[in-house]
Length: 252
Image: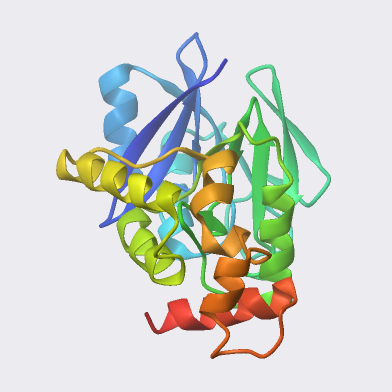
């Protein structure tokens, strides 16, 4: 089993550190090198790999400095996005090995046109696609691509741990409650999230199971969610419901 630690960066980013038992590690989406280097020094760890999900600067800004400090590091990332210093370009369907665990590369377009995720060892690193109680904005792709990407994630085993890149849970839960005010699972989750954040604790990882209960973007087939966007779309197919939800969230 791999050990996962969160390294906070900027206001609300998490850089995930994946550690094995012999002081080797990898990091996911290091937007800033400084907190990563501080953590590696403090815990006497050697950086072997960097996994990148997409090209936004708050996910790759720290890569050049980390490569400078660890010249042998393997920089894995999306083949179809402009990521500097990539040593190992991957795309949907590829596999990578990380400390004797196999991770599969998922194509998760929508937030950006070549966004990918990594799933293995019961863990999902999904960048800015799925958040707890929310999903990423659609910047470069289409609503249809984003909906398809979320559907892929919803199909993963329910116990899969979800390591997304931002602590957006509090604001996402507020929106989810606007969509489904009577969702009792969501009400309980709001209380748990408020307690964790009051103690400055992360709300992540979440699980696919939990997100299916509380995340409106994974619940586009639920009557309560369909009703909540009835004033925004006359259609009831999941893509139309998703699009209406995402547009509502954009202005929420």
